[in-house]
Amino acid sequence: MERIILFDGVCNLCTGSVQFILKRDPNGSFQFASLQGDMGQKLLKQYNLPTSLNSFLLIEDGKPFMESTAALRVCLHLKGAWKLLGALLLIPRPIRDLLYKIIARNRYKWFGKRESCMLPLPEWKNRFLE
Image 1 (tube, one colour):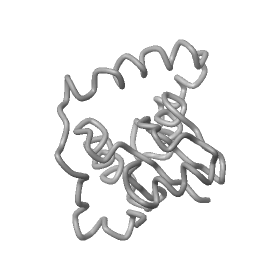
Image 2: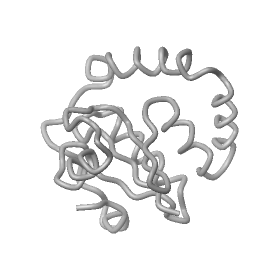
Image 3: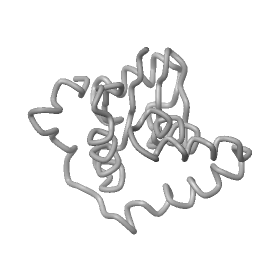
């Protein structure tokens, strides 16, 4: 099963989320690509998504999921009690996405922004698509 997470590589919240996922995904279920990178841009085009997209995106078995749906589907595959957050998928998507969009819109202001994309630790490098 292929699972690729596209993330904003200059967002502190987003890169922190990637590190959080890496630590709770010991089986290596997820691969990662920054939205700003060549592979991220290639995948956006492949799935007919705007290359200006700056939202968290999960591609699971060839199907893209965005915003709160993507985040909660990721939780389903993490070790520990994080799987329980998947139950929030029962809440209608417009309600879930409203909260997601508030956080996304303010993420640089609340969590800051990097000058360049995150460099993965050597033990995680094989999980990042170039």
